[in-house]
Image (cartoon, rainbow, N blue to C red; front, top):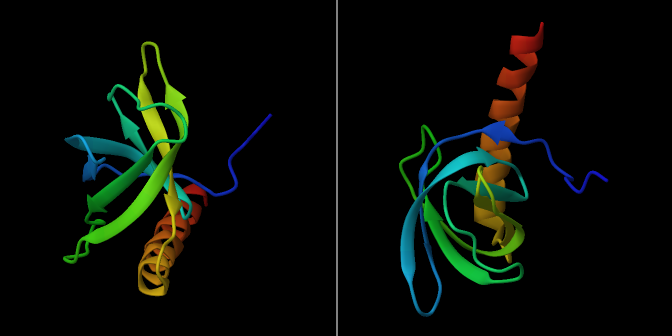
Length: 111
């Protein structure tokens, strides 16, 4: 059963993610309007709340938001899917604008 609600685009950016106890710097593999997937990282348990900070390509202002683990992936291609949580209006708008451009670029590549 497909759980994804949003189109994902390949995006590699550095993401700071931290909890009350620890902080990590990870790289993303893909991005959507609803969340981000961090690759090659040992996942936190499903439901773990995180703080996130990252800068989208061609943007100079970091995004700071919260997220929670919705897809901890173990095994050879380990990582974790994080769903954004409690986005403010400005952050939501910046993510939507980035995704509008990214989705348009994907569509051009299919023509």
